Image (tube, rainbow, N blue to C red):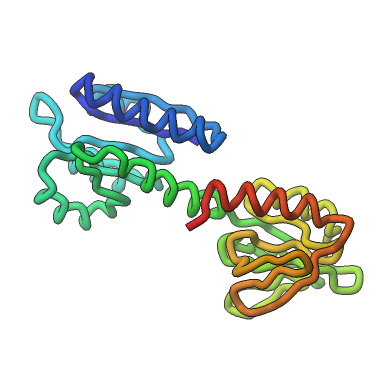
Length: 234
């Protein structure tokens, strides 16, 4: 994960970097943080997942123009505009601004990072072979759970659709673990994002489905769920 800052004033650049570093340290998130003082220096290495971008830079450089260039290049970078003039925020719809942060309220950086990591971590698509041998793309952000179905795996989506694919549930659980999924019992992997409630015996998902917590995976699941809520809990 790469986070960049483009801010011409050193005092603000240092404050913003310090806020991001503290957030990542507190949340135990690994991220590369790069800071630039001009459009020219940033655009030479324009590679970022999240960009904190000052609207008004020195020597007539314009944050909106930088955003337009990124958009035209096909970049999927999310942009948080930094400004002392909140009335300029209305121009941001043209460049799909992710957030506006008033420099007087830098504590808003934490909320922006919370929201970014919450969505980014599941912006992945995995590919599985269905029973006909066809590759199926499955969006993790829409995947509710994976369960065993005979010798196959059933991928249940939030909209109720499902895919029956080849695979082993133990291997699938390992592959999905970094993206917010965990075993609940040996036959089920659930998306931690869509758990509505948990008690000592079962989990309830957002669609009302109840799944018993298996004894073999109970401790592992509860640890994963606790860590997820610490990072991304509302």
